[in-house]
Image (cartoon, rainbow, N blue to C red; front, side):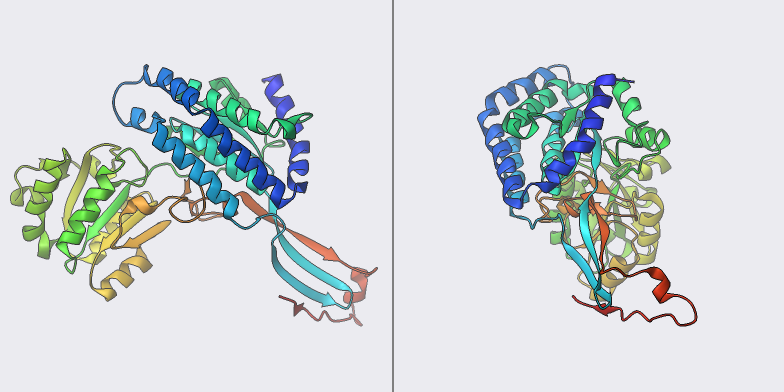
Length: 426
């Protein structure tokens, strides 16, 4: 075990209480310092990122890893947005009088210490740090080796910005080696939640090697279904946006389903648009008969997250077939229907079992910042605790506070038990 890392974790368990005790204004001030520090260190951050990019071949990983002025500006905006959100600590969720002088309150509380394991997404380091600070959680960060220079530079910038908070303590730490990951996954007494953000292999490794609760998604196989009632121009615009704006993102469209009644009119237009933008379509045999320029798909294509300028396409006979396909082959991340028919849309929105289900909108909207969460630590496809983009609320748990005046439980049990009044106060 890495003794230094374990020492940091033990310190974090104590420090997070200090963090929770800070006022809302103090935590906002710390966040503002981090945002200012990122602006201050912009040139050195980009230079460190260039060191990492030198070793990466062109492709999805390089696009995810790149940190430029626009991404840095977006990170600052995300931090600033987190500052505008309501204080998540100590929010009263429920309050009830059990009896005279016996008041029960359920409040929001910080999760504790969070371990964030992520691959080539350096912006994730800043997002998780800002969300943890705002929510009163300690955090240990482990980024992929392909971004080691960028992660170190971002981490050092954050540490400089909050130096006064950590004079005698550790609130945020950076794990350095792959061996550290396996050590962290064994620390169920010191870590309260693990968030893996990256490939299927990473998420599977984490889930199979820890007793700590895990929050995350293993893939982003998003589908857009073009219904027979769809506006074709609108559908083309949405599909292009969902594929080309950031092909390497987990919310990019990977599978396209088209109703048979519009396939003849729609597919040639889609083929022309996608070909113009360098996008390859792997289509079923029926679609290839309409557009011979399509590449004939294999069964594997409909279970593939391309993370590039490729997509799978199939013609379906009905909306029910589309829904069944999505629920069987999708990753339960984000899926959309293009439809002008209200009834068809209602059925799709109700029956597709995904964290995000959209009508007439790009799957690329699946993002914590776009949802108004300020930032996100990732997108969860789990049905327990948090689902979809995970922002501040996804990093909170709750606790029950009971304030009495000397009551004992025996008073409320037995033959002559006194009844509870159970009066809701909010």
